[in-house]
Length: 145
Ligand SMILES: CC(C)(COP(=O)(O)OP(=O)(O)OC[C@H]1O[C@@H](n2cnc3c(N)ncnc32)[C@H](O)[C@@H]1OP(=O)(O)O)[C@@H](O)C(=O)NCCC(=O)NCCS
Image (cartoon, rainbow, N blue to C red):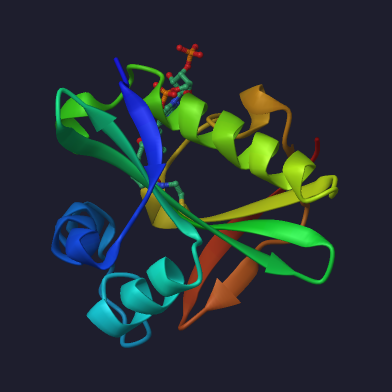
């Protein structure tokens, strides 16, 4: 069970990078675990952590582009999956979107992650056309919150 979701600070960079290791794909443009990339999002106040018993069990980073909030990174530590932590982080993203006075939330997921209906069962629609990044296809999910 999550004890809290809190804003990340620069002292969390290493823990975030190591959690993202579980997402790493073999591509030159895989930036999500790069210290510079993580620190920039932390400095922008866009990185949040789910904690349980004092340890980081999940991470989410959010970014506003135009009038849409994008879930930039979402990961739950492998040993804590299927305990609804991912769902709670998506709920957090929904609240964050509403607090900014916005309604559009978007998430992308590389085919390789095989997340099944994780987003669609939380009210997201799967866009019919996938995106492509660095030779890897990804699903695009959108929700109105
Ligand atoms: C995707 C991810 C964030 C889900 O987090 P989680 O805490 O395990 O998910 P939850 O426990 O909240 O699952 C909610 C529902 O989605 C389903 N689900 C979760 N992961 C799934 C998967 N890989 N395949 C199929 N269904 C899945 C669960 O079965 C659950 O269904 P239920 O409501 O019937 O019980 C986590 O598996 C993860 O970090 N994966 C690697 C990174 C990733 O794919 N990130 C998302 C794309 S950026």
